Image 1 (spheres, rainbow, N blue to C red):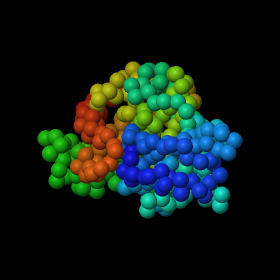
Image 2 (image 1 turned 180 degrees about the vertical axis):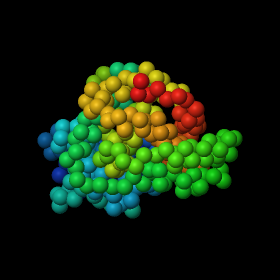
Image 3 (image 1 turned 120 degrees about the vertical axis):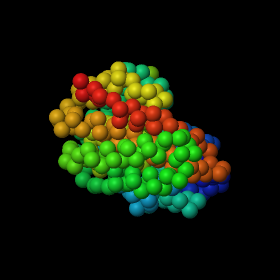
Image 4 (image 1 turned 45 degrees about the vertical axis):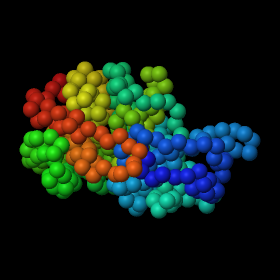
Amino acid sequence: MAVYTHLTEADITGFLAAFDIGALEKFQGVEQGVENTNYILHLIDAKKSKRKAVLTLFEKRVREADVPFYLSAMAHLSRQGAPTPSPIANRDGMSVHRLAGRPAVLTTFLTGAPHMSPSIENCAALGRTVAELHNAAGGFAQERKNDLGPEGWSPLADACRADAERCAPGLTSLIDRALATVSEQWPSDLPRGLIHADLFPDNVFFDGNKLCGVIDFYFACTDFFVLDLAICLNAWASENGAWNQDKAKALLLGYESVRPLASTEKNALPIMVCGAALRFLLTRLFDWINQVDGAIVTVKDPLEYARLLDHHLNSKNSLTR
C-alpha cells in the first residue's frame, strides 16, 4: 500500500455517492507498501453506526482488465472462510470503478495489525494460513498468468541494467548469475493454482499472536503453490537479508501441518527461494531507479534481497531437512 494519487474530501464524497455504506467522516492515506494508492475511509450511516472501508486506486503494475480477477479471488477465499477482505459493490452491483483516472475498488476493512518483526510463532501461523489459502483455491476456476514470473525477469533485468551498478557494485553480475541458474533449474510441472504472490508481513494482520487477516491480493495469479511458499519464506524467515533457519522451519512445519508438500515440491524449494528473491530484487531495483516525485511511499531497499539472493545461490540449502 502507498499513496501516489492524492484525493480530496470532495473526490471521495463524490465517489461514495454511488454506494449505500454511509457518509465520509474522515480519511487517511496509507504510506506502507509500494504499489497502489490506498486510503482508509471512516464512515457513518444515518443511524450513527460507524465502519471503515479501504479505497484502492490501482497504479503502475496493475492492468485494469485484471482487477475483476483479484476481486473474484478475494470473494472466493472469503466465502471459504479465509480471513480476507471482501469487495463492496455500489447500488448498481458494480465492484470496479474509476476515480481520478484510475481503476478503483472499495473493500471491507480488516482489524488487527501487522507484526513487522514476526516471531517464530507468527511464522508458524502464517505457514498454516498459506496452506489453508492454497487448499481453498481448489474450487477457484479463474486463472491469471503470473506477469512477474520467470518469463518476466529477464526483461525487468534489462530495464534496470544501465543503473544497477549505481545501486551497488557487482549487482549486475549477481542478477545475471541468478537468471542463468533459474533458467537452467526452474521446474515445469508442480501443483499449481491461485496464489497470493506478495505475502509480506505488512500484508498479514494479527490480534496478539492470532492471525486474523490477509490483505492486498493485487498480485494474485495462477502459479506453483511452492512459489507462494518460497515468497513467504524469504519475507518472513529473513532479517535484512540474513536467513533465519528457525523461522523457516517453523513456517514450513506450519504449512505442512495443513498441506503436506509433495516430494517434487520439496525438491524445488531451493530454486524457488532463489527465484522469489530474484523477483523482488528486480522489482525493488526498478522502483529504486524509477522513483515517483510527490508519492507518499517508502522505497524498499533492493540490497536486502540482493543479500538474500546471494545467500541462496551460495548455500547448501537445508530448507527441507
